[in-house]
Each structure stands twice: as structure tokens, then as C-alpha cells.
Length: 256
Ligand SMILES: NC(=O)c1ccc[n+]([C@@H]2O[C@H](COP(=O)([O-])OP(=O)(O)OC[C@H]3O[C@@H](n4cnc5c(N)ncnc54)[C@H](OP(=O)(O)O)[C@@H]3O)[C@@H](O)[C@H]2O)c1
Image (cartoon, rainbow, N blue to C red; front, side):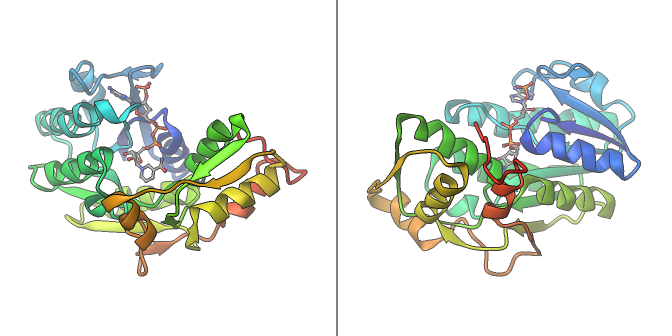
């Protein structure tokens, strides 16, 4: 199969490209800085050339800031789908987030809107909803923890290794359009503060974990675990701690 991955240079996109190539597929990597196929979802530039002759498109693009989320994820999906229709692409796989329609944040609203654009479009589709990647949490703790304090709200999360999500995305590609959703989560649900303490212990970084009160609807939603799933279609097997320890043979992860 010939597959184009929008956002193929990103965290998930790279894993997905490796996974699909490993299964013998031809992969085109699309992004603004891709050495192969330069595309810009905010303008549509480069899409027609990049999608010519492709069977399937995986959309693993993301917005570098919440402000651009609507432009890249929602309007970008419209541009991408229009180019797919024109090129005769038969399957669009959209990567989304577990519970995105229940998290009262601008970025998550854009993800839910992106899903609606895909699900009401003409190109046969599959939506793969994942929980937060281990990579995202580790990078977030490292960035915030530079100041030696980690102000963390209470939030029930179920993080998953990106490589395990990539396998589910590749299965979705090979399975063909479902016109439905597939959920993939990590193996355990844990409070974000517990995960932060484990990150600190395993990486050996010094940072004080402080409670960050998150009032209002967002705080209630995160505490109640809206971004988790009790009955996912696929439950990953790699726990956050084990993933972190695997980053270095000594068991201490440099996760900057
Ligand atoms: N991170 C998580 O924990 C998580 C969890 C669940 C679901 N997801 C979803 O998974 C998807 C991928 O997330 P990620 O964390 O892997 O993203 P990421 O690492 O931030 O990668 C984003 C990708 O999008 C590309 N991109 C950004 N702006 C673009 C534009 N205007 N035109 C074309 N390409 C553009 C980037 O490349 P260039 O900069 O070269 O353009 C990059 O390849 C997103 O839909 C996200 O919502 C993420």
C-alpha cells in the first residue's frame, strides 16, 4: 500500500512511518519541514503532489500551539480531505484523543471538531483515539521541572507508549475504513502527581512536586478521568515507569 502520513516527522508520525515501512508499505512523510514532501496544512500547499497515487492518508499532524489548533487541525483537515477526494484516496485515518469531546479546553474542542469534519466527510475514515503519550508526559515534566518545582494538578491519566499507538494506527491502515473509532490506552490509570514523582525518582531530577489547584469544569473533568477509558479496544502493555527506565540502560532516563 502507498500511505501518506501528514505530520510524519512528529512524535507519533515517526513511529507510524517506521511501523508501516516495517510491514512492507511505501510511506510518504508529509510536513512543513519534511525532506520528502513539503506540505502546509494551513494553506494546502504541496498536498496535490504529495497525495498523488496514495491509497491511504494518516493524519498525525498537530498544532505547535493551542492558538493554531483550529487552523491546523480543523481547517487543515478540510484542506487535506479535499485534496484526498481530488486524488482518489480511499481511506483517511485521523489520530485523536480519548475523551477529547469531554475535556473543556480549546485544544480538545478543536480535536473534537476535527473528528466531526472527518466523520462527515466524503473520504471513508477511521478515527484512532489515544491517551497521552509517555513521551509527552516525560517532555512536559522535564520542561516544567527545569525550575526545580513541578506544580501539578490532580488529573487521572492513562498514558501509553507512542510505539504502541503507532501499531494500532498501522492496524487501522491495513484494516481499511471502519467509519468508526478505535480507542488505545496505556495499561494503567494513575494520578498525574504520582506519575510526576515516579518520573523524578527514575530520572534522578531534583524537583519539588507541588499541588496546583485547578478549579472549575476543567479541574473536575480531569480529576474524574474524562481522558481515560475503562474499556479501550486496545490496552497497551508498557507502563510509564518501564518506558522511562528503557530510555537508558542504566535505568536513568534523560528525557529532555
Ligand atoms: N502527544 C500526545 O500525548 C497525544 C495523545 C493522543 C493523541 N495525540 C494526537 O496525535 C497527533 C500527533 O501528535 P504528536 O504529539 O505526535 O505531534 P507532534 O510531535 O507535535 O508532531 C506534529 C507534526 O505535525 C506537523 N505539522 C505542524 N504544523 C503543520 C502544518 N501547518 N502543516 C503540515 N504539517 C504540520 C509537524 O511537522 P512540521 O513542523 O515539519 O510541519 C509534525 O510532523 C495529534 O493529532 C495529537 O492530537 C497526541
